[in-house]
Image 1 (cartoon, one colour):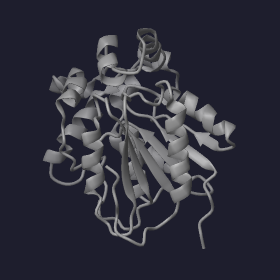
Image 2 (spheres, one colour):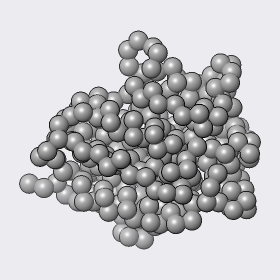
Image 3 (cartoon, rainbow, N blue to C red):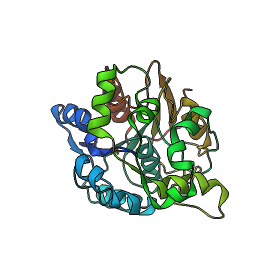
Image 4 (cartoon, rainbow, N blue to C red):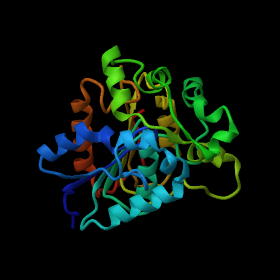
Length: 280
């Protein structure tokens, strides 16, 4: 029997932003009749302005706490939802699917899960404000407007649009969580953001990349997608030309939102009779 069509969308935000970054997508999907949840990380329940004034919740949060909270949100739902994550939220989306949460997932400009070693130079430059010093592991590290513009809004945004995005969405990021993600490939045992790439029960997963993304270029998502090896699972990757990292707010975001939803509805709960495939 085919599983019920999902009626709920869970939107997972990334680092340096909050659930507010999903405001357009949330309204868009709600207008289509879906229940939409955009859960904040633990301690991020306040507004952007409050987190910028007191970033202590950001400095203390861990990847394990974020994963545990998101799992509790999804497992409390009556039926498995569509999970859509952006940036670090894309990595958390992969973890949720691997842990048996959700009917289908879409990872936008996704951060890599453990074992993906592709590190483009533009990604190094984008994350340097945090990774330049191990002392940042105990801090919440903000980006200046210029740093945010390079990493998030480098193409497709006018200067006024980029400034608005920065003022409306930007918060510091957890230095400890970012450093732990970098070190995950060099420590023994599994860390916070890892998945079983051979999990044959994992729901379908689509990676969507922006061609001009500096912080999470398409090469990162391609490398991530190719890690998945379980026969019968569906893993695809597509790239949108002329899109920056914050393509969720870039002009024309509706096209991406509609495609993500349509793909998810078409593949939710499905199993592939043939081995995995990629559109790279």
